[in-house]
Length: 324
Length: 278
Image 1 (cartoon, rainbow over the protein chains, first blue to last red):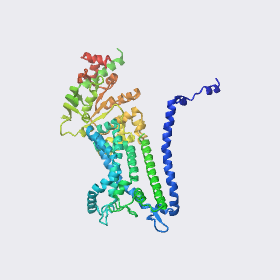
Image 2 (cartoon, each protein chain N blue to C red):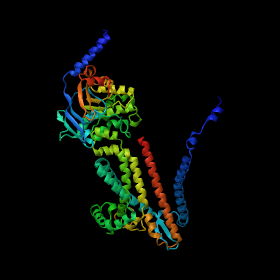
Image 3 (cartoon, rainbow over the protein chains, first blue to last red):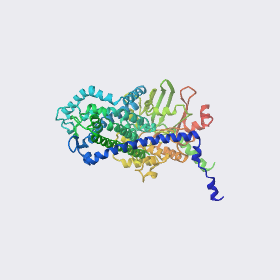
């Protein structure tokens, strides 16, 4: 037979497999749905980017590198460096509190707790994720603030010689620490639920191997379960971080917003957060130009969370490769 | 009778005499009964394991062999609801005594599992040394340990040029020998093997069997196997386990492997070793 004939008998098996009418419709619907999310994302980016152009033209690079919000001067000056930095600082504080807490909680649920208690805990932690952030903010304002004030006073009293625990004003309210603590409470359910899932999937034969080599729970975790689940845990942390970076209302209740850069004094009153800047100014915005400035700030917040998520994906895929 | 045949008979007899000679016991299970929750899975097991011999545990699936082997290094107790009666003597002491540290027991009584389980994120070298690291043992001669244990496990020549490669790159049979080397690195006196070849191809199985024969000159080996020929090839002693339906498993017959396979006293043993059930 000639090669031409062979060509003629070739059949497109894939289209044959999807020729069923119901399948075709279903395929189009899910493809459409998948693209919708992309279109929405692109739409938000374009809208924010376009709005940000005038603000960026008037302020130049100083918008990102300086800290000021003097709208009524002529010309108005605005810079969000302190806010951007503040968002990151709050997220770091939240990470420092939430990550160890979540890992310990997950280890308890997976390896130590009796199944019934583990199940109850799982439900409780998932329920924590369902608390609206405005409720959490109110709770933090009325309930968390008084004891947190005392904790910070103690920190300052005993560890005040460490620069991050300096406090010159004697005011321990509205600090990055409290705001970071509230963010940590919001991150814990996310990070815990991912970590629990990943630790629960540690292959039993590896646990067997560790046990038969006479290792304690701690060494098993350190050398077997945590390295095995590293990719997933980092992914969970980044998910939580995304939430912490963008969180607005809960922070708004407990952070004293100052147009200055609080570099490291975590228990000193006053800090910054892009999202909180936007929500606090939006209600009393003085004109279209300030609105554009706020939208520009929003654009960079959006960019920041996007970058965090991309880094997270990179880390997760890299650890995934290593494990293979 | 030709000379060759005569010689082979003689070696067999020599082996039998050697195995039958009185030796110190490495381990001794006495009247051992085991439960999972309310279900009794083993009843009144008495087996003595002479030092530096290989004992095969045979029997159909579900007769409690694997459970039994896991009671010998206190892995059984890690399963929720596990309970046990009787005693397991090691160096003359019951390993279940209150003052015995299970971690110490698991180091002295190593274990190799059915599925090769090297730590995938560690290198070959790292895997061999992982027992030292996990148990916090301090040793200086790491290179010597790596070479000697991999040699004992019959893997050294295949991996000596790539000790820093990931353990996951090895074939299943190589991984299983790596796991044996890992178990040997903490210098156990007893090595438990739970169907170590059941996930391997015949060539790898042969290599592992050679390794077992070689190792049993220095270490007491207790091996669970479903492969009758394997039991004959590697073991000095054999114990035959059996469980009637909904009854706990027990030892039907035990003795020299040659006796169990050529001249069993119990009809059920005869049927099982001849492949009539199981």
